[in-house]
Length: 73
Image (cartoon, rainbow, N blue to C red; front, side, top):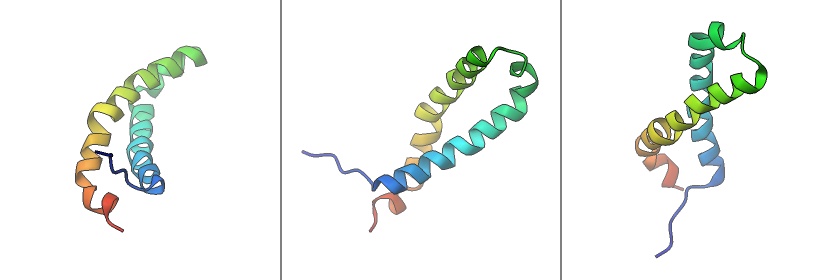
């Protein structure tokens, strides 16, 4: 049984819909604290929060919400 995947361009849009507001919100909320950290540590902190949030919360939610659009046409 083969898995059916949506077109790559639709997947890219869904990922962008998840990433853009997440980065914006995290930058707004945590910006004053992480801006003082060295770049490597700041990137580690930001990605350490965003990747699990995207993989376990936002992308499954968006995939379920946009399922009809993702797999049609």
